[in-house]
Image (cartoon, rainbow, N blue to C red; front, side, top):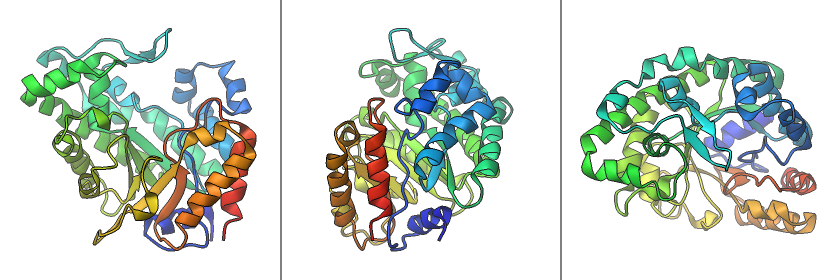
Length: 341
């Protein structure tokens, strides 16, 4: 069974001799080869140059042999393609070139420009697919409408995103108009990624926890449902909703084939009682990779044992790899998963 076949079998819910694996942020600052590239190019240049994005995507595959590669990009390419550029602040965090403050600014956003303006992502996917070959899975991704709206309305990273919550509360019609535009843009973007060779799409609802209590399904999941329905039937979508794993019924209702969960969740029991359970992805605490090889092997082994015999399981972290993760610990993780039977 190839790595790609293994990944797709897990998505379908099959029981395998070992789970497929990839790690969130598996291409990034913990890798010496990535840091070497970053000395020559800034992040946006890496992401927007297809040959460089392909190189970064393949670095962890070459080093560790993960079953799946995820294209190197950023969730904020969508607002940029719609007419709201972004940058990285000198003091850290994301800055949009302006905040969405008026109905006119929201109306001026152009979802129909996504394919043309993000053609560099499609090129990177095609190049990666060609170099990766048919034996490894290739993932595309994007942010959820709710998470993208948070940055766009606030004008970048912010504590608590109060402007997002104010718009939701005081101008729900305008909020809905923005979400409709984001859904249209993301549906076109994901379709483009599928056509360029992606085997699955991961949706990152990174700011899911911002949703008011009792309203997560209303303000975020309903839009994710709409987005998934716009894609080809049965195309694999992975949903990661940070801080909302406890709202299981809402997440299952999204239509995602796979739910990606953080390390606070009892993974082996998560699907108990569900009639048509989704596949699961996760959920090792990424902090383990900052410690020792022995601790890594122990934690990975315990997670694998806890999921023994469960179908529909993809081994992953519960969040992204930390920049200070040790390459020898990632190697220990990979070895432990690959030797598991």
